Image 1 (cartoon, rainbow, N blue to C red):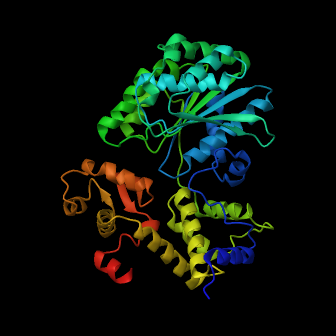
Image 2 (cartoon, one colour):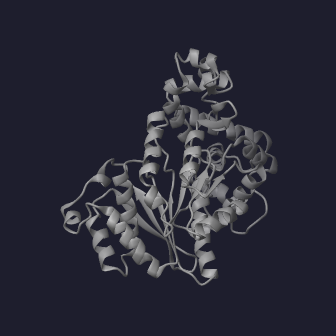
Image 3 (spheres, rainbow, N blue to C red):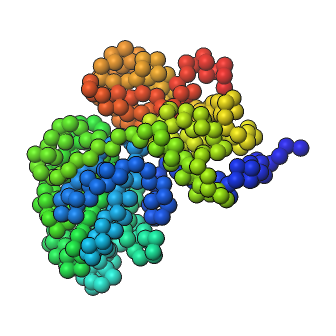
Length: 430
C-alpha cells in the first residue's frame, strides 16, 4: 500500500530532527522581529552606514536587485534604530510602508498623513479622528512587537485596488483633509513632542512598470514632494530594485539622499548560514550544519542562487521534492534527483510562450539591448518593448536581472533552467 504523502513527510521530518517543515520563505517575517533578527545575516556594515544619517534626520536610499534582501534589511534597520535611540535615552517612531508603487503627490501626502495619524492616534484626539476618517482607503495597518512585547514598528500595506487612496470621504472633508499638507506638518510638530526621531521607510517606491514614462512618474513625484522629503523632522528610507543611473544622479542633485547604499548579493557562506539558522528554528536540537542537505548540496544551492529569495525558494522546493521522492538524505545523486524534480515542477507551471522566451534567453546567454540575435528571434525591434515582460519574469523568479557595464541583462534563473530547455528536449523529458 502506498504511504500517504503527509505521513511520509512526518516520518522524514522526524528522521531529519525537525518539528515541522522549515520556514524557508521568499519574504521576511515582517511582524516577527525575533525571527527576523535570528535569520538576518551579513549587512552589519550597511546597517551602521544607514543608522548615522537617519538618526540625524537625513534620508537614505537602499538599492538592490529583486530578492536581494532590501525588505529584510530595512525592517532589521528599523528595529535596530529603536534600540539605538533607547541606548541614548531617546524615543524613535518607526513607520514602514509597503506596496506604494509611485503615484501622484496627493496620494503620497495622503499615505503619509494616514501613517502619521495612525501611529499617533493612541494619545492624540485629532490624529485619531484623522485615522478614523481615512479608514476607507485601501491600506491595511499592523504592528510589529519587539522581543520584550512593546510596540516597535507600525506596518502599512497598500491593497491591490488602485486609486482608492485618492478618494476623499465626507468625513475627511468635514475635518479639513482636502489639504493634507497642513495636517502632515501639524502631526510632525506634535510627534516631535513625543519622539526625538521619526523615521519612515517606503519599500519599493519605484516598483512601477519599467518603461521610461513610468520611471518619469517617480522622478516627478520626488520633485513635487521635495518639501516633505527635505523636512528634517522626519527621515526617510526609500528602497528600489535599482533606480536608473539618470534617476540616481537626479536624486543626488536634488539633495534627497544623504547616503545611498547598494546591497550586493550575499556570498555563498552567508546563504549557507541562513539555511542553518532557518533549519534550527524548527530543530529539536540545534546543530551547525544544514542537514538533511549535505555540505556539497547546500554549497551548490548557494552557488546557483543569485539572491537570498531564490536560495530560500530553492531550499524549500528541494525539500518538497525529497518528500515526494522519499529521500532521507540530500547528497550526491539524491540531491541531483530532487533538484531536477523541483525544476520540473517550476517548468510545469510556466506558460508555453514564456518557455519560448526563456529558451531564447538561455540560447543566447541572456536578453539585453546589445544582444541583437535574441531580440531578432523574439521578433522585436527594440529592447524597451519587452522590458515590462522581463521585469515581470524577474518577479516570478524565472529570470535574474543583472546590471552590467553595458546596461541591463536578463538571464535564466537556476529555478527556471528546465523551463528553458529546447522544446524538443522538454517534450522528451517531461
